Image (tube, rainbow, N blue to C red; front, top):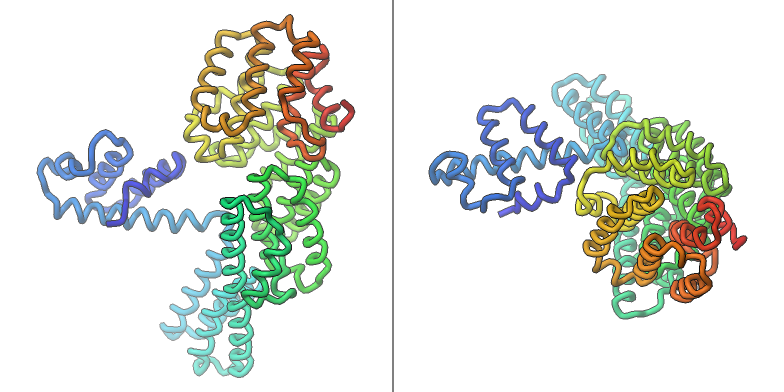
Length: 498
């Protein structure tokens, strides 16, 4: 039996609310019982064996299993519809054109049907959607005797060329999965990773040519693996040279400019983000500018990336030393729709940091009053690093407001809830210990003993290899030690002045 309960519980709170509305709007008879079953699954108060009795008042297992199947069918429809979000609306439009075109041809409306299939072909070529092209060419060949304008030989050649591309894509997918598996094995065995060597082996293994293996889609897939490796090794500085060298080669190929546009946009954002982490803020903004130019020519993707771009522009501007300009940019992001989207939540925490640097603690409190979900939900939605940044900024804000009882409570809760995470991050654990001393015994902060003990206890890394968010939190304590402003000290640390 398919685990319906597990699928429902793994939906986010936002998705669960959307699915609840989806059931209510279905307009089917017995909908109330379907909704009742959904609510029982969500509540987790009763074991599944009790569901039939609670819904029907008796052990009506036959009716319950039919109800369960109807709810499952609705869930699958809902997930399929959600999949076609704004990122994939072009693919949805292609699918609709193919289905409509085929329907019209079968019902002898030949002219309109073939017109829709040709329109679907144009869009599929623009999206490099070889699977849709395969279906379109097969339909054009199958019904070619109804359209004398179709050149059968040319259409067959198109289908054959497209099949070669489909095989290449399949080989690339196998290569991508193999690289990922090799990385995982190497990490488990503690073997040092040589990415170029692994790549060369896998490309040879799956007969991938240099030409087919170097496009925006493939590079985007590969940099996700490199980034995942950096998350394990903490060597983020190794990502930029890898991606920039390969991006430069691909972007010089004229034939690649209009292929895999969506992956090209995602790749530009990835590079801009890596450069920000490398503290190369001007270069990061340049890639964001390139991204905006590409989006202006492909407007269907603009809404997907507008908040992401604003958040990263605000970060770059803030760390370049223009805090007031950063505030204006991030406030544009906060006016975007979708208050539970990942991009909006990112904007919330980035804005709290910008306001903190301005010493505008009232605004920070206002931001955090809107973040009411549980830590568990935020970890699932945003990841543990996002949650750590959020909670730490909140704690620092209340230290500055001298709400020390609240700080003690939040810090204790933070340490207890994230004990497992902190056991794997000695630097964070050490930082929190010194942070506690800084507000409980402020007179000790500027003593030589505190300074030397702190810097000897926290592992030092070269500036360009140090995570920018780690530097920002270190700057708070360093500012206390020196009797300086946090923002000023943050900029000095990021620039390598101190």
